[in-house]
Length: 234
Image (cartoon, rainbow, N blue to C red):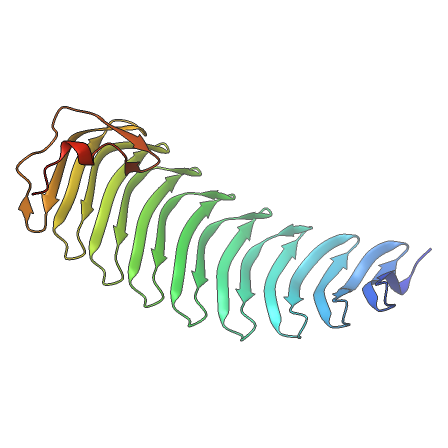
């Protein structure tokens, strides 16, 4: 019967891989895992065989990589990840062992990269993505893990370059693309993931005389592949 500190596993080179404290053969107390080079990898605590309290992960060079909390063997509460230089990489929360609530990811320069919202591990609500310079790049929405609602894309100067609508993961409704100066380039109505109607193409600052208002343009992915033959760009 194990009591006190025991080594649980070794690396082939003889270095300790896992060690922890036991009470009557049950993990209880500080528990450590190591990188093969001998540096600390993980540190957390057990109470009667269940993970409880603060846990930390470390890079094999010794810097803090992650910090979170356990409650009754499940991740619970704030959860933070770090770059090797100490800058925060990601901040979020857990509930019942699932990501829950707002989560923010950062570039190494400290600027926000992505902001998402989750409910019990499923994306839900607004999602924002940014360029490294801090300018908003994308805005979209989820409902119970499925893309649903308006989507907007912006260029690095913050000018709107595309907007569309998704319903339950399907492309539906108005779709518009813009030139980098903000003037309208292309507009249509999305019938489904493969067809568009009421297609209009614009030159910068003025509409092309010819436009498709009744024909459906077959789609592959999200880009039109049979649009150009119907258009007069001269």
